Amino acid sequence: MDIHEYQAKEILAKFGVPVPRGGLANSPEQAAYRARELGGKAWVVKAQVHAGGRGAAGGVKLCRSVDEVQTFAAGLFGKLLVTKQTDANGKGVYRLWVEGASEIAQEIYLGFVLDRKSERIMIVASAQGGMEIEDLAENAPDSLRRMTIDPAVGLSEFQARELAFSLGLKGGQIAQMVSILRACYRAYRDLDAVMVEINPLVITGTGDLVALDAKMSFDTNALFRRPEVAELRDRSQEDPRESTAGDHGLAYVGLDGDIGCIINGAGLAMATMDMIKLAGGEPANFLDIGGGASPERVVRAFRTVLADANVSVILVNIFAGINRCDWVAEGVVQAYREVGLTLPVVVRLAGTNVEGGKRIIQASGLPLISADTLAEAAAAAVAARPRNAA
Ligand code: GDP
Ligand code: MN
Image (cartoon, rainbow, N blue to C red; front, top):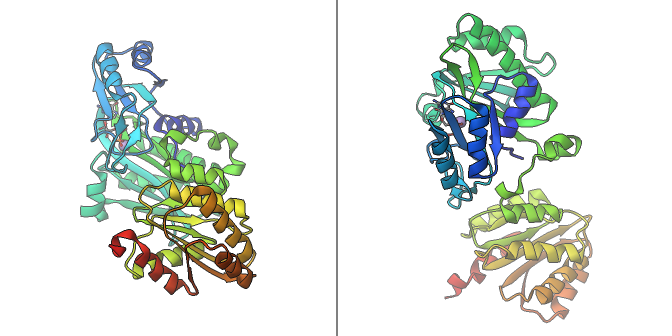
C-alpha cells in the first residue's frame, strides 16, 4: 500500500528525519492560507498523488507570492496528473501540500528497498539525486551505492558512516546522515514498510540535510497489525477495479488484455495467464477467488471481471482441492443468469466433485464452453474471442 508524500514526511519526521515545515490544503484558498501561515517569501506547492515524477509533469511548483500559490493550486485541484509513473489515466489531485521553499545546494538520492537476492533490506544511495535518478540508474548504475543490512545487527553506526563518506559528505553532515539513515531504517522495520525513498534529500544553502520529498510503501499483508498505517489508505488513488475486488476478499490485479480470468489459487492463476499468452491471447486480469469459493463468491468474481470493458471472453479455471467443482459450477450458472452474460465463457473444472460440476454445467443448457485441460481451455478462450470469430 502506498501513502502520500505528506504522510510519509510526517512518519519519517517522528523517527527523526528533518523535513521542511508545511501544511495540507484541500482547496486553493486553503493553499494560500497555508502559505501565509508558514510565512517566508517562497513556497513549494505539491500535488499529493500516489506517484513520483510529479515535478516533470507540472505537479510541483516553486511559488514566490501567495497569489501564485493560489493560482497554481486552482489549476491543479481535481485534475488528473499523468506522470512517468502513472498510467495514461493519471491520478486525481484532491490534496495539496504547501511547504516553505528550501535552498538547494545538492540533491542526494536515498532509498530503502527489500533485496530479494540477499533477503535483506538494502540501502541505495547516490550523490546525484533529483529528477534524473532513473536515467542515472540506467546509464551509470555504478554511481549508485548499495549496502545491505544484517537483520540480526540492524544498521550499524559504522555502516551508516561509511555510506555518508562514500557520498562525499563533510563535517557535521556525516552525523546528520547517520541519524537520517538510522531513522529511515527504524521506520522501515517498525512499520512493515517495503520501500522508503527520499529523493531528493538535499543539502541546503546552510549545509544541512533535509528530506524534500518522501515516499513510503507498506506490506499489505502486515496492515492488520499496523492500524495506524492502514488508516492512511487513500482509495481515490487506487485502481477502482482492484479496491472493490479487495473489499470482497478477491485478489484482483487489472491487466491490459481482453481474456477475463476467474481462477482459484495464485499459482494456478499465474500458470493460466502463461498458458493464455502461449496460446496467443492476452489476459485482462489476474484473479484468485481463493479456496472455499461459494456460488455467491463466484458471482462476485464475474461482476469484478466484467467491470472491465475490455473483457471479451471469460475463462474459468478451477482446480478444486478445498473447493468443490459442483459449487463453482453452480456459481457459474448463477452468474450467467444473474449478470445476464452475453460473452463466451470457457469453463475448465478439475478435482473434487468434478463429475457433479460438469453435470451442472451441461444440465444448465447455457452456451458454456467446456475444456478438460488447461491448454485446451486457453486455446478455447483465444478462439472464442469475437475478433477471432470475425
Ligand atoms: P517528484 O518529481 O514527484 O519526485 O517530486 P519532488 O518532491 O521530488 O519535487 C520535484 C523537484 O522539485 C525536486 O527534485 C526539486 O528539484 C524541486 N523542489 C522540491 N522542493 C523544492 C524546494 O523547496 N526548493 C527548490 N528550489 N526546489 C524544490
Ligand atoms: Mn522526488
